[in-house]
Length: 185
View (spheres, helix red, strand yellow):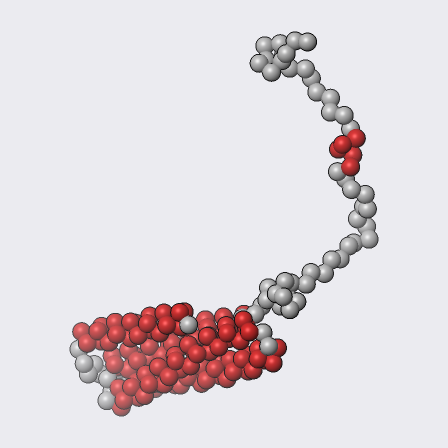
């Protein structure tokens, strides 16, 4: 919940900062129609992939609920909730981008395109996090401890190598007579 709140606050801050930068730029910069169309097509492709990531997230959430793994359900749900918020932001930015393109305002259109691409990149990160939820460290017994399989290779020696350490007497040289550790008998 805390991560989600922080992510939303950071996103809102970025949008406000982007709006402030856009306010400093002159409005109504004419743009190339071909460039606007390419940006609109790319933004639509980003939106389509965003929707695909969210639907994949719902599939992951359903699988997590089937396995009744509470920590995985929470992890997937947190990432999915943030992704849904980013999709809503990207959709509203896409509508604003279409309005800018209809006015032939290149700077405004570019600004909205950048916001859509940022939302897409953040959603890709969250999608990776979502797929990594409940990885191998979580899978284990009911009490949460992992099940460890022990494979012993047949060519390994069966005797303990530390046994011979106690059987061998240590022979060392006597310290020199000038040594503070040397004591006369």
